[in-house]
Image (tube, rainbow, N blue to C red; front, side):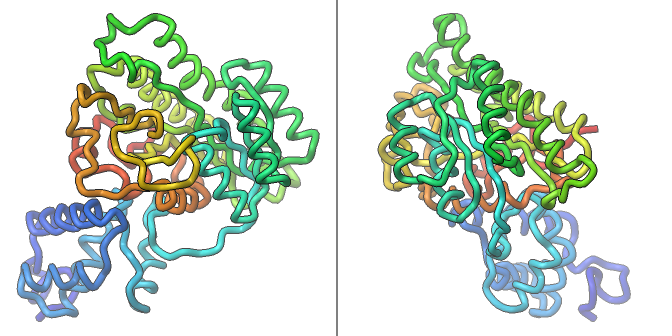
Amino acid sequence: EEEGVYGGRGKKPLIDDEGVRFVVAELKSKAEASNEGFSRQEAVGMIMERFGLSHKAASRQLTRRILPVLMKDGTALLVDDEATSHDNQRHRAPDGGIMTQQQQPRRSIVISGVTSGLGRALFGYYCTQGHDVAGCGGDHEEIRSLQVEFPHAWLSVVNITDDDAVRRWAAQLEGDGMEADVVVATAEVCPEADCNAPAWEVPPEDFDNTINVNVKGVSNMVRHFVPRLIRTHCTSGSDGGGGGAFVAMSSGFGRSPNPHIAAYCASKFAIEGMIKSVAMSLPDPLCAVPLAPGRVSLGEEGKMTSGTAVGDINHQQQCYPYTNNKIDSDKFTSNGLSNDINRWVNVAGNMILRLNRKDNGRSMSVNGFHSLRDRQSWIIQDGTGVP
């Protein structure tokens, strides 16, 4: 009899724990290789072939034993038929991984670091999706250019390391009627990536700059925008808007260290700790999440184009700094993945908007943009929450 999780009358598993681990590892590997996910049809077929089960039994095993494990890791299940779509409604990835694409309600989104990199990509994506978006950056010319391209957006030149400047920016947005549903802190630097040197050889000004931007800059955003999230979503009479979120860009290097970028690693481990601490103090329904973006190739000046060669540090997001192949090259090879910014921003952009209270304090990563090998090396794994 091939009913349920167990064979016979519930005495013997159709797939034992070792078999479950095998299937999970295989499907994760397939998802990483395709950079999109795997289809239910592929998964069921693999289980049928490996364990000699009928289609019905394999499908049940996938739903009841395999998918719950995969969903915890945010591995994506692609929609390939009506049955899959129905199953996705019951087994949605907790980090908003690719399950079904649904139109998001209009939100008010604040982003730091919009003049380059992932912040620029998210800013453009949310603007074109019809959301109310406010952004800041330190490049005057880029801010002017973005204002021409997106005339309805709120844009400001702000030094994110200057607490008073961030305070004035937040107050200005509030005075202009710009609400805050989602705040994304993306501004970051990694000047020591140019050094390719151990920590004791990194110039003190580089170390200080990394900490100032990557840690103090995020702290300034927390200080002046979390109270706004609380006022918008938690005070009496507020409509809540479905909950608010504060997202800070972490990194794979905030999950496992690297010998040649000590300040960057320190800054990203600090982000993990800081945001988890913030999460422990947040009232319901808010959430705070440290998000590791993964490996993303950016086009010229961080605009939303693809095809940039891996290894060009001027055109790479600093979450994975590429330098002269002296840093552990296994961490930076593409492993056959084609990770362009257009695909990343669709996955990450939707994921961020789906964050809710149950994600509060959880370390998360953008699905499909970290290799399995990278994930296995992490000291802080996806889903690690707070007490």
